[in-house]
Length: 194
Image 1: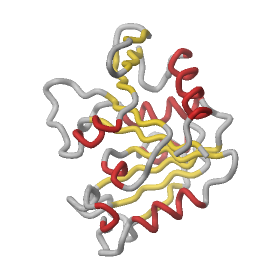
Image 2: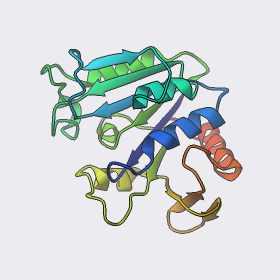
Image 3: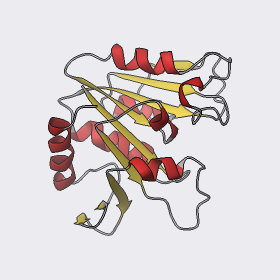
Image 4: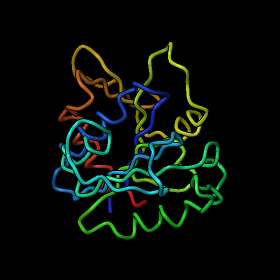
């Protein structure tokens, strides 16, 4: 099973667009897309499933991009980085929820998380960091993401790759993953076990 984590430094980094681009490019995988947030979204339960594709919400965008399932998981503020003791807003542990999401994924399937802090609970095949603009306020979980990131992804005038200590994919649009990046992701999904 494929497990990918896409994180970023803050709002507007292109995380959702990158998640959607990856799912479109890797359409042979039945994706369960999961956004993990600490922001209140007016949902009563810590886990909520989107059923309508569109562009009104991030989870609706996931479905429009081809996700088999799209879930919103709400974690209590400041709880995701506390090992297996992370709690939802209802005070119940999140670890069993994350384990259930992964366990219920069909074969050949995959789970793609939009979150930095999920890295405290899940070991992905691939971790990607959507680079933030230098003037954005960075999330506290950004250091965790950087420690686990296999590659950086950032917007540029045209698609190209920078080979450095950490590979950087520069994309003309986050929602359109370049063929070189798709090949790189496929290779790592074949070679790595979560």
